[in-house]
Length: 402
Image (cartoon, rainbow, N blue to C red; front, side, top):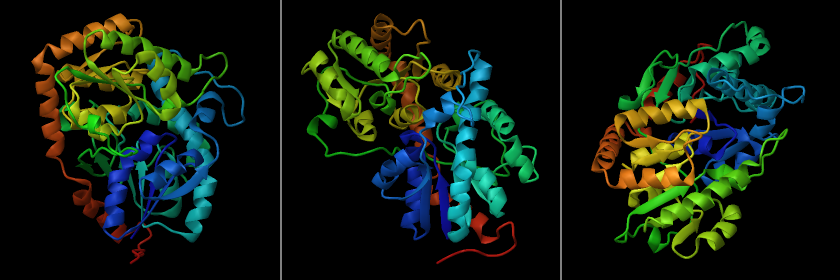
């Protein structure tokens, strides 16, 4: 069987799909994964075959429309959630010609697309094959779909469609206790166990050893290594580094052991600023999360799911409305604390750390979610549901390859 996976414009979207793609590859299927050109090394780092779908980075579609004119990010929460779909749809439209040409020679039997990988349903409709929507995390995506449909009006009309076609199968990684109130459209939904995936490195003893002090992990995601400055926006990288520096200093003042997870490009200055009491640099989050007491992060869905699967309480400083809603569901369950913009300074971070470390219920609730995630079907177990779709494609022909 040939399976084409379609990720997005960030490493997190590759990590989310990698466990199922690896399970398919290990089962003997022919597996490709498509994403932006700059994600190709991330895909191959997962041991998978990469398809370069487009040269432009995701930020190009965030800050410019299809004609290259500057685009303004809306200020309202609902409008921002819809705009998330708009810029992912722009990226999908840019990828379609490349993917259409590739699949003319290598026709997949089934297509698996990430939450906002809108090239998936468009390409599946064009080829007449089934498609699977594989959620990346626990975010609510239906408002993004509305924006995507508006942006893709012409592409949908060309296919004789007015809206995005529902997935033949939805693979839902969000644990049942944290599911969004509104589900994504699909003919069938199957729960899927979250299996953490991320870049690896040689393991150092401190990554799995525990001392007597509380251990706290602090991260602002992989974007902290990039410089993204558009139309007067402050450099995201510099803002993140300033936060990591100031918050890290406050955490060290609590007499805690600090791990600051950042790409190596961003680590040098932080090492100098925080000193030898902090471990700073690239570290495999799937390993260190199991050996920490608390994690602070900026709301990334993959980071949050990795923490949940490890039973690790979290303090979330969400950067957008979609992240806020997902983080608030975890907080309502009792496994997280959310610090919204304006209340997310270093002092507030330190106070939140102290409160969570001294309140056992946070760890207990995080452990309950981890047990729930562990009870869900593993990627290899749901692979049969994907294969069943490929057995009888929409065209009525069988395209299963040995």
